[in-house]
Amino acid sequence: MGRILVVDDEPEYLEELVEALGFRGVSAISVGRGAEAIDTLRREPAIAVILTDMRMPDMDGITLIRAVQATFPERKIQFLVMTGHAAPGDLAQALAAGVVRCFSKPLAFDDLYEALVGLCGS
Image 1: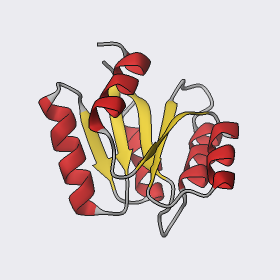
Image 2: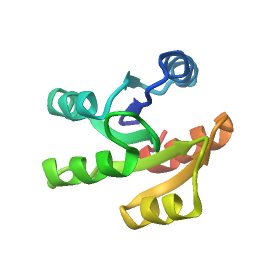
Image 3: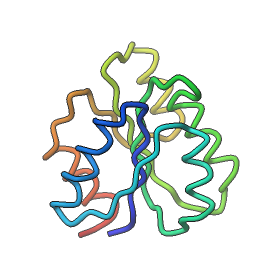
């Protein structure tokens, strides 16, 4: 399975999610800001999937997705989003930006894991 990058501005949530993915054998790293995600992608060519929060203070999830697509057009990165406060327009924007799937917080972890396996293989 390719490496997963998780982006969320809640450090405790990131830690728990990366740990839970690790228990299932998923290699995941995390960052707390959109700009850090871009820097991490420069250093980590094995990242295949980004799971990002929709609402973050420095860069929202849609802006991050568009920045990744513009900065790394040659990479086939897949995108998943998570949010605790999605408006119908947010989800439509996410799908239009190429997001494969949207998840509500708190995450249904088994659903997330199944989506990751479907995107990256086992």
